[in-house]
Length: 123
Image (cartoon, rainbow, N blue to C red):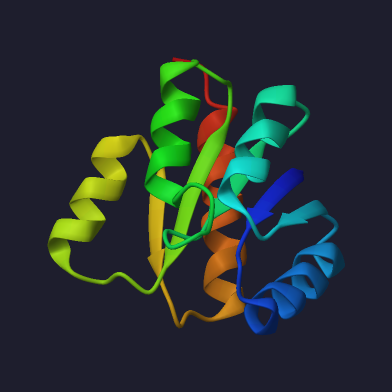
């Protein structure tokens, strides 16, 4: 799967990149939200993993713009914002799933597989 990772914390992004690549995903990393949105609009990604707190444009703003433009993209929010209101806000903004930091890589991989499986289901 072609994944865009929007994460400004290098200490989290690098292990994520390594893990996802070992899981046979092609991953592009952006530490700035505005640049991440530009890349998503340009196309070629199937999944966006979005941190909420990003410079340039936050993850919620990215997902709102992705949905406004009707881009064919799965979105999983990866964030430390764990309040129920934040989870609901992220999902209402258009995220397909929401995972609170810290998380285990195995859970992230399972959620990615679940999203991928659901995206292939005929409706």
